[in-house]
Length: 379
Image (cartoon, rainbow, N blue to C red; front, side, top):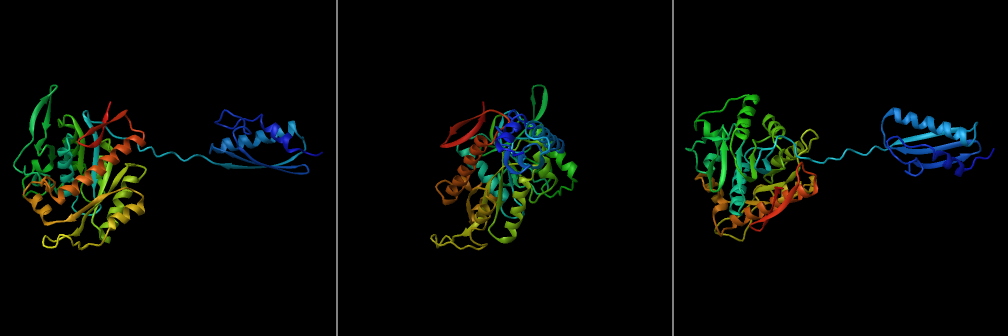
């Protein structure tokens, strides 16, 4: 008996692919049919990866061809499983804090690259642009924000909020601030195991009255460890910023920092990489640039990792001096440093806007304009 291809196709229209509403011909599951005398070879693709679905499909094809086409046909079935990969939606995880719209974690794989300096200047620049800003100093073992904001002698006050006692963050330069440094002596080392550090952080996060905040910046400790994991699990992080200097030893650690946020168990969008100490320009030679730590290393890393490059900050003595005296350098109006931090901050805000627009968030959002930038707020 001569078997016709159209007869086999018509028979296969009686079979519905597991998990789909259409028959396997309409759905495109049948990829190829070859006939050699009384031999029929059928290539199909299904989306259900289970062995049960595969075996069921094979049995149904055998039965229907034997019944509708030729009872003695020799049938070979090649089943390919083409299960769609689970999309990484990067949905915001963690317990939301009422009033806080966006939480940005600032990290570095390596210590000493200026992560805290960048965080402080991002915060004051956001405040200058008109945003309501909070800053959580999560560097438990080396808190520096009280010094950088000239509030080393301040203490958070206890206030009553709806019958509960809450900490009131210290405010400086328009930024609401909490740090473990407010609760320890300047010469006191914090010698805590991971669970104790995580508990202290949770108290500063959830037992504080932050009020309405457009951007909460979190200054993470260097490296990757317990604190980072605790923060990612506890809070709905909008995205992360990774700070690095251009030299290879820092870039290797920055790469690990990016990889940490991109792990399936964490899955936090990386808003971009910042290159700090990008070049040195002496005051007497303002047109010259000296690439002391290498040229554009962080920029090239961002390109290699396919994450945004947010901008570069030069190595300038006044940035260090400003941090030491408790007045972040971005507050120096009309300077190249102010402009560098403004450009960096605008890039970060635009990435937050894109993150919340393109990746499904856990809440409906809208874009509002403040001081020439866009911010993301809940409806």
